[in-house]
Length: 252
Length: 243
Image 1 (cartoon, helix red, strand yellow):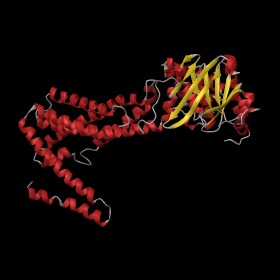
Image 2 (spheres, rainbow over the protein chains, first blue to last red; image 1 turned 60 degrees about the vertical axis):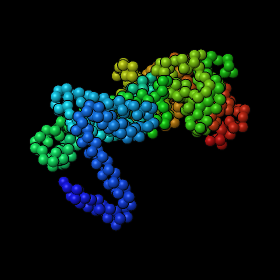
Image 3 (cartoon, rainbow over the protein chains, first blue to last red; image 1 turned 90 degrees about the horizontal axis):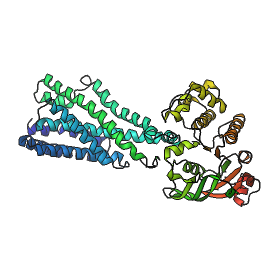
Image 4 (spheres, each protein chain N blue to C red; image 1 turned 30 degrees about the vertical axis):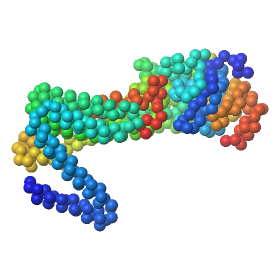
């Protein structure tokens, strides 16, 4: 795509701007900021990736993945900042997922050990895990708040914190995993996945593109379940103190 | 008077806050062992908070609580809560049948409740055994309170804390529950601490009474104090003017 063609794609930005102005939606400023940010961020990432891919240096690959995990943690932690130590709990979960999936992918030689594969796949997985973490924390907060009486009841009957929070924990885990599973049921029928479409547009063989998309789909299933379950088990003890009392104010 | 009794629960200058709000102020006093003590007072007096402190659902910010002359903090929380049962006013139910709710205390310690035992507990609280497999969510307020009491009794507590457990009951059910609690107290020597809005209940069932107002103990003593109050507040409260 030439820079002229790229410039022409700004027509797709002008349309929502005109609509927002006409209908007085007040979204012009946000639309412009989003456009400028996406241009700068993506161009920057493009150049950084080119540099890293060309260098084939393990250190740079490691730094890129660390940067992704750091940014994802920073974003997801806002949803659970009342949970003590949520930052490192999310970070540990993301690191664990990264290590687990890359070990399987590289260990079984499913993908070649190059920056191109490692960084692209890590980006998709960490991004997905971040969304999962946010979904889980949101749902867990809602479950804990709405079933506070039940939690207190089980504690009052001599139950452990784990027994008292079990139902809410499992419900939140399940609820956060459902969108991943559901969206995969209709994949290819309703929408072509972004990665696959990108590969096809860039000239790759569609069957090859589908094979890689399947790999990503399966990986995302692991990412979804491991993120929810691990974050759940790391988070719930922070809701109680050493006297097995449900702390007020957490997860509001 | 209370000083001559052996205490089941003793409070020593207990204070409890939620954020900046002083819920319980400098509470000192005892609930006598093996007796029925009622707690009365207007809404927001801190009565429920006082009960939750007793079985360790919450801890005071200052002061000490003794259970059978041992510091509450020296008890392992799970053992303490099995020894001191509490029936909460809202009578919360877990998802499932009445039987599943009754089986909960045993299930929490990895044991099973026999259906025949569950039937006995239901009969004790005056509920027909046909309710056993009914969904707990479908029970009326009064039926929930009865199941909640039965469930609390399954742990066979030494001290029983009751929070307005008869507020949703009709007159006949109220009498049945009162008789059951008195029986548990007389036969098994279980100490009862009973929050009630019903002053007649406090007079007839309770041997001792605490009157609480705005987080403070206004009067304590034998329940007869409600007949001849020593303070203006309790006089007005008894006459229904201090709610």
